[in-house]
Amino acid sequence: MKLIASLCIGILFGLGLSFSQMTVPNKVLGFLDWFGNWDPTLLFVMSGAVAVTLPGYFLVFKRQQPLMAATFDLPKKQTLDKPLITGAILFGVGWGLSGYCPGPGLANLAINWQEAVIFCSALVVGFGLKR
Image (cartoon, rainbow, N blue to C red; front, side):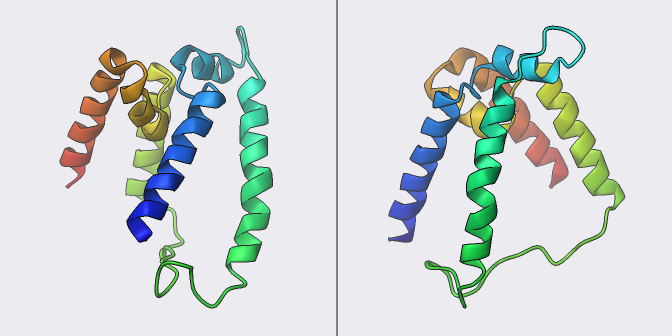
């Protein structure tokens, strides 16, 4: 049941990314271009995501445990350190250069695989370097 739920949520997430055009690198790069030809449409996508997620958190954490797990698995570390800051910088630079972040990059394997495979290969190499 957990695998089926995960598959359904992944499909819904991918459809949402595609529908909102988060899988179109030029759309994302237009949003990041604040001083040029700025495209604010992804601001509405992010606002919609926050509008759904924020009340969802309050509802979920009123429960004793998640629906499909024994306990909530939350990060225990709450400090900013060098690896976190370095990772955030690398993420931002990669996102700004390519127009992809991991979710849309993976979703684009089904849409524009020739371009996305380059990004996903770099993603896998980055994961490997971290380990």
